[in-house]
Amino acid sequence: MGHNIDLNQQLPRTDLAIDLIEENKSKTGFQKEVKQNKHCKVTTVTLDKNGVKVIGKKPGHYITIEFDDITDHENEQDVLKVTVKELSNLLKRMNITKQSSCFIVGLGNEKSTPDALGPLSIEQVLVTNHLFELGQVEEGFRKTFALNPGVMGVTGIETRELLKGIVDEIKPDFMIVVDALASGSIERLNKTIQITDTGIHPGSGVQNKRKEISFEYFHIPVIAIGVPTVVDAATIVSDTIWYMQKNFAYTKEKMKKPSYKLAVGQGNYLNKDVSMNPQDNIELMGKIGTLTEEERKQLVLEVLTPIGYNFIVTPKEIDFLIHKLSYVLGSAINHALHENISFEQ
Image 1 (spheres, helix red, strand yellow):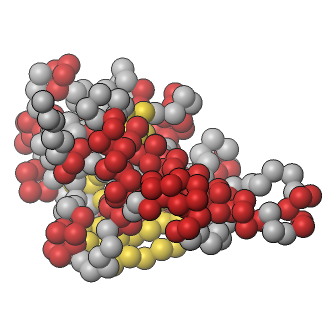
Image 2 (cartoon, rainbow, N blue to C red):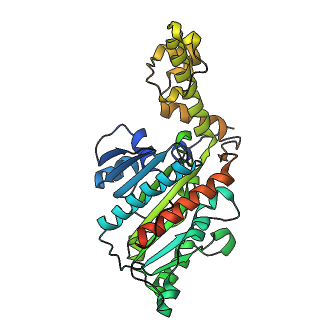
Image 3 (cartoon, rainbow, N blue to C red):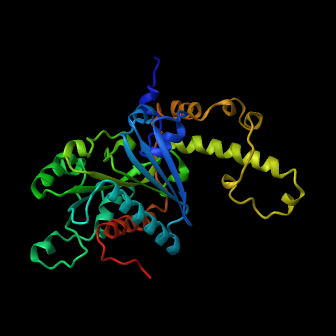
C-alpha cells in the first residue's frame, strides 16, 4: 500500500529567522544589518508585512548573535557584553523605560537538558519585587518577577493560560521569555542567540504545537530570547553532504599547489573561499550532487521520516554548554534591566 509524505509538514524545522531568510531566495520583505565584533557577528533583521509571506514569521525585529566558542572565559564575557548591548538597544527601541517592571519567564523542561535553558537562566536572574515591597532597593534597579512555569506534560496546563493568570494579577509592564530553540543548520547549534520583539511560539521548532506568547494575547510587550540547542537528523545528513562537497572542492583545489604537500592538516575549510562547481558535486555524489539544498533535505526526509529515524539530536557536551549559555542569558538580562550591576573584571 502506498504512503504519501506531506513534506510541507515534515521539512526540517527551525526557530531562527536568519535560517529561513538564508534559505529563501526572495530579497524583499526585510532589511538586514550585519555588524562584526571581536568574537561575535550580529545580524539584525527587520521584517515587514511582506516578509511574513516570505518566511512565515511575525513582523518585527530579529537580532541574531553568532559566535564560535562560549566555553572560553574571554569569549563568554564578550558574548555576554554583546548580548547586553543588543538587548538594551531593543528595550530603548520598544520605548520601555528604566522604571518599567519586568516579568521574566523560563520556558522548558528542566529535567531534559537541551530543554532546560529557560529554567536554568531563571536561576541566574535577579528578582527584586519582594525587595521593593520591603523598601530595600537602591536606585538603579527595576521591579522584576521571575517564573519557571514547567511544561504542559507535567502541569497539564497550557503555558500561555498559566502565564495569563499571573500577568493579570501582578500586572508587569513587559515580559522577557527565555526558551530553547531548534536550528536549521549544524553550524548555529549552541552558537547562536536570537532576540526578538515578536514573542515566542513554545515548542514550534520540534513540531510541538503550543499557543504563542505575544503582545497580541497579553497586551504588553513580549521579548523572546533563545538559543538553538537541538537539530533534527535530516538537517545533519543534508549538511554533511554539503560539507563533503565543499571539502572535496577545497582539497581538489589545494592539491594543485606545491605548498599543500607541506601543510599539516587542512584547517577549517568552511571558512575558506572555495570555488565549488556543479561538476565537482556530480563527480563526488553522482545524482545527489545535482540536487539543490531544498531538494536534498526533502530526499533525506523521504528516507528517514517513514521509518521514524528523523531524530531530534543534541551534542554530547550539552550539559556543559547549557550551563554556560544559561549563565550568559541570565546575566545579560540582569545587566540590561538593572543599572547597578557591573561586569566581571
